[in-house]
Image 1 (cartoon, rainbow, N blue to C red):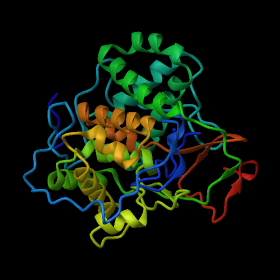
Image 2: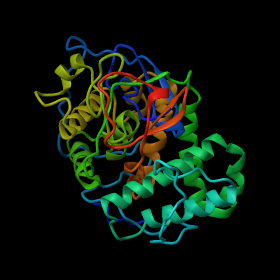
Image 3: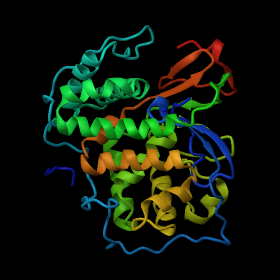
Image 4: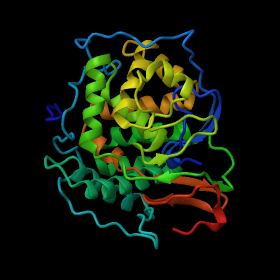
Length: 348
């Protein structure tokens, strides 16, 4: 395809980010399940930021290298979909898309959403957010109902079916580690992320200077903080959109701001390059967080975006959900609590 591109889950400062000593985290809402584990701590005594030539050859880890993107990805319409179909999903009282009630409904809604996402025109940021949220709910439903997958695939066609299976596998990997629902919502602020084209520019810059695939950096950003929506420290003290421990930031941050999207993305690329990327993406991601489900989820989303860059548009719109004793709660942009909030007291 020639492109112009030049989950207790719930997005949470998950993975404890870059080398958090230990932390309990959750990953976007059932799309990728909760991740609980410890990330290796990197100290200045054991690691240093890599020196990588700007001419380093980008790699997508086993696939044909993709040219670093400079604009929001667009592409030909995925098989089984029609471009630019208006999407008007049923909503709950809080304004979140309702889950589909059958495989047929899911397949129909997914075809419409992904057709709109894959169109050659660049949707407005607000539209991307709505489409991504809808897509997220649909894939979360498939993770919860794997018995629907064959029927959905038969309706979507081979290419879309293969993509759906990859995304479901990434979500299922994380879901397998989900623990007990949370009694309280962490002390988070949920903010609007940087525009998709802006973040894409940072990923591309990082790939050009480090060789780490833009899609891998986007996948980590997605899993860690839902593209920077979650503002809050992990239980181990990891911070910022890529969830660095301050001690690791001292090694790889190069004097930047741990909470700044560009600084954090470039630092993450430096860390990954120092631990084996792009030659060994799995090993580098494991150093980022030594959890099998974390590695599987990150590599799964990376592989989807590397193969079909337009899918970045959808992932950018995925929202923050948290699994609690009061149920699965959507935390929209604008939510903020300075102290843990009892799940039973949450009002959307």
